[in-house]
Image 1 (cartoon, rainbow, N blue to C red):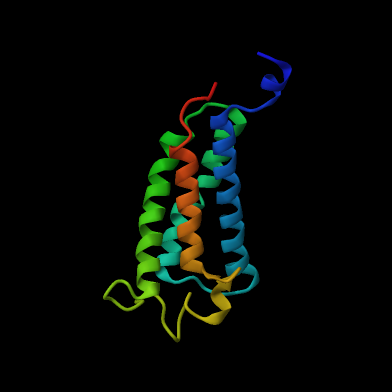
Image 2 (cartoon, rainbow, N blue to C red):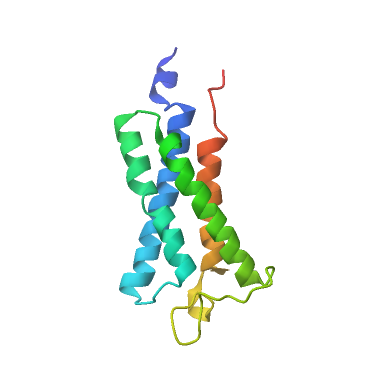
Length: 145
């Protein structure tokens, strides 16, 4: 093993760190939208937050401790969040027959023009974040020689 190999983190560590950064950015973004901008999340957004927020300490502690158990603990949250985000995105896009029930005109809504970040609606951003986190946790297995 050369010095360059010793300084490079293992592939699994890099994947978990990337998943952690994505989860942290999504969590901070959700908190900013809710607490700073004062926009109440709809019911499906709340459920997605329930799946996203625990990923930050789970992945962060796994990186800090180097215990490699992040996948075991994070996968259920990621899968649940992806399923919720896919359902929410399908409702938002009109692909599912039901209207966007959790988003109302008088109450919390994620369908207004103020709910678009980087040109994408919040349900799509959530779907992308959960998909990226799961890709980081599932795809990189083992090391390359």
